[in-house]
Length: 112
Image 1 (cartoon, one colour):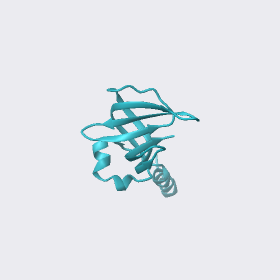
Image 2 (spheres, rainbow, N blue to C red; image 1 turned 180 degrees about the vertical axis):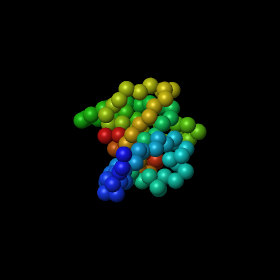
Image 3 (cartoon, rainbow, N blue to C red; image 1 turned 90 degrees about the horizontal axis):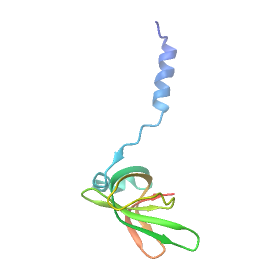
Image 4 (spheres, rainbow, N blue to C red; image 1 turned 30 degrees about the vertical axis):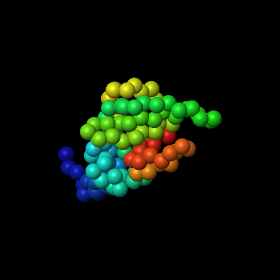
């Protein structure tokens, strides 16, 4: 089977246009260079720790740390069911600083 130059070029352009699969990071890897991920979508895997559910006037928000050797903060506005000690993979937007209603958090993945 013979492939024409135009067909090969079309396949190459399609491959370039496809978004790259996102790498799943660990908290330690993310914290090696947090500025590189500022405002970007990230996927992070680790162990859930210090789970808290807060109720506001308008909604319920789940917050926890996601850890390996280091920890990041996850603020989950979708309130997915989580448990302390379980392995979890989350996807959201990374923010080096996030101002909540009562305090400011560092190294946050925000899930909306």
